[in-house]
Length: 361
Image 1 (cartoon, rainbow, N blue to C red):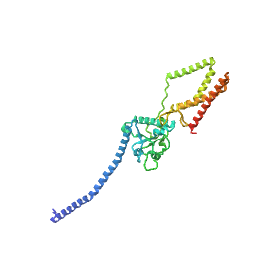
Image 2 (image 1 turned 135 degrees about the vertical axis):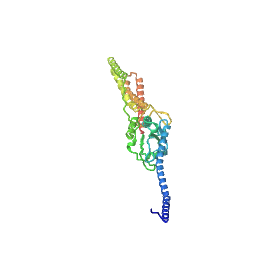
Image 3 (image 1 turned 90 degrees about the horizontal axis):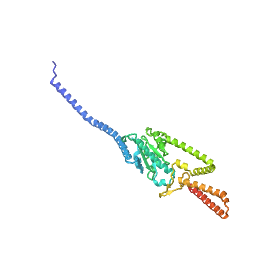
Image 4 (image 1 turned 60 degrees about the vertical axis):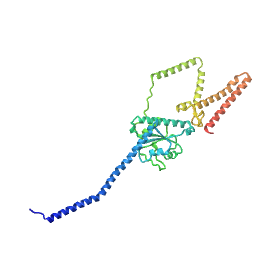
């Protein structure tokens, strides 16, 4: 059997020892590289976690702000507060932002603007309630903000390109908002310039497609009692007309009816009822104000007063023309005609003066 010589065994042992030394040296050289790669991997994982954690923190913050409010609307009056909520290339929620005018500004506006201010708040409250009823609190991703228009927020409204009141817009999840940009480029379809609840629901559903704000038309339920009552009124009215015609009073009744129709038509009561206009408005001191310096709007009381003035003028003309000549006593006749003339002239002057004041002439 071949046996290795002592010299060969010594040489092999030396070679093995050199190989072990080289391997340990290679491991020592690669250790910094492996450590750097491990640190880079950990840093990358942490870097991905931090933005995600920050977005979740933002979501929880805005949820808290919404639930701290009594009606669920977040009321802000500083530009920085809203910018903090919407700034960034994306966000895990959408924000509905509505313009809010302070009371002093609303007092100087017309009735229509005041009505819009009330209606948009009611529409947003209803939208909050409807949205919250559709999902649990920890899954809410749509929030409503009412931002006050003032000196601090004026520049932010310019960036939002808000040019009229009322204006409500949606900052979507993927909407890019950079604070230093001149405008935020909110798309036109993300803007709502009305205040009605149904229109507001349609706007939110069209833009967000949440399946929550489908405003289905409510069916009008007419009870049997209402039907019977309506027919009863018609029958009684026809019976009354027949009775008056038999007594020879139909012509005077028609004259009175035509006067009532004229009074209602010129008073604007139908418009006031349709648009839910108030009896009076308050001025900046809280005092009731009947007349409004706005040719497009009016109060109910203003319409009643002006329409009654028209009837007074018409009555004075009729009295001066037809009634005055029926008196025999010349003294009384002269007094009556002068009184009618003065009342009619003063009423006419009042109507003209009110009209000029209303249009700002």
